[in-house]
Image (cartoon, rainbow, N blue to C red):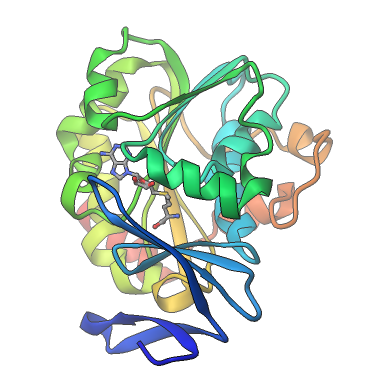
Length: 285
Ligand code: SAM
């Protein structure tokens, strides 16, 4: 790392992403991971976990809006929602914008992520006191095990990359648990990395694993994400019974809250996949 830049190197791809004028303002080694906060010249605050970029003040809306609104508008009546991971609370904030949601449980293994987010990204935590929200700090794999069957409408997996204790969140065994805990018509959405870098290695296997767990339909949506490897990211949804081709388009158009990236039109556009990605997914499904 050079003096004025914070740089994440992606050794395997031979690329890096950097932000100029960056000063480290806090560094915490939690029992689970190392969390660093930088103050940058052009992107506001930046959080890194174990050296990987997670969230910045300037662009996080892209990721948080796309991890929440497509899944919620793809369900007919999302009342009970859970977020596994997501400790920065940005996805939680977006979910709570939906008036139809009656309860949201966020389960992040690491309380320090939330405490640092409250300090440096207060805008992401502004709805944490909503009486519908419950914040838990335990392993999502353990939590899902303990839930009653058919007790959720939407489950959002907003995790770190599939390594270490997040690895289990990408497996068929975990998806089978999620399937059992979702009510009929329920939807799971998982952050699914870069279409360019991980189309074959993560996105296509995710579709296969969702189907192996019993889900009837799957769908990947893609969106820009400048601070993550390749600058292009995705989330992948799966539905318990029925198809995912339609969403509540009129409700999305008439939504009562503001968004900066998500709209009914962007939702529609994000579902259109480039041929190389559809071919990778179809090749494995
Ligand atoms: N936007 C980020 C990305 O795509 O890389 C994800 C951000 S969010 C901060 C990821 C969170 O997942 C972290 O706070 C981490 O503690 C949490 N996490 C990872 N594995 C987990 C697990 N097994 N159970 C609960 N939370 C987990």
